[in-house]
Image (cartoon, rainbow, N blue to C red; front, side, top):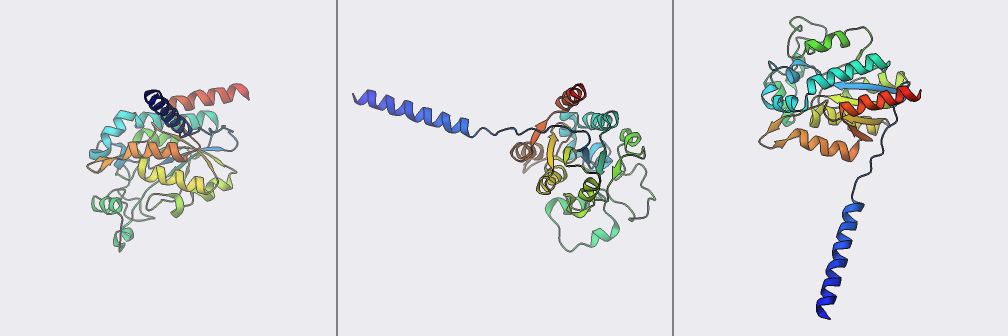
Amino acid sequence: MKIRKTLAASLTATIVALSLVAAAQLPDPGMTIDKERTAIVITDPQNDFLSPDGVAWGVVGKSVEANHTVENLETLFKLGKENGIPVFVSPHYYFPTDHVWKFEGALEALMHKIGMFDRKGALDVEGFEGSGADWLERYKPYIEDGKTIVTSPHKVYGPETNDLVLQLRKRGIDKIILGGMSANLCTESHMRELLEQGFEVAVIKDATAAAQVAEGDGYEAAVVNFRFIANTVWTTAELVERLATTDATQ
């Protein structure tokens, strides 16, 4: 009798545990793409992150290559142009006046130390062409076509310090397809602020990458948070399929 009771109790405990696991499964709210209300937002598509010559390549390069980030970001640019979806770029620049800040976070201090995204001045483009702050060369035809909206620079990680939200609101946009660099820093910070501002956000998880350092893998940390926080998380291939389906139903 005791054995039966023990087995029954064990079975009950197992069922309860499995139920709790099932209940903890996160829902996927999804996001419907309405081309009249949707924008593609790309953070920091710049040489210092995405070029082997960039100052951050030593810590982000493996993640960029593993995710095919450079190619997938180019696909996002192409999809925007081909589907009439406006593309916004939120860049990261540091001017000489930014180097006299009195306090910084860990990555801010590192970026300033290695001269990441440095420019000579807000109105000075001397030496900008081909620099670490410049766009990756293969993206220039998309960014410099006179249609892509390049916002003022964000200064830490999120769009709280630039005009991205204003530019989106002025165009009646409330749905965002998000990619860019770096996953657990600027990209995640943009996701968080845009959601707080009332936008729907779909993150393209292989159109980003992050640093791998002794303290941990920034990309893996970001992907977990994308899943917890964003409306949905897609791959680039999934976005291509969804846009094709959107075209077929319109």
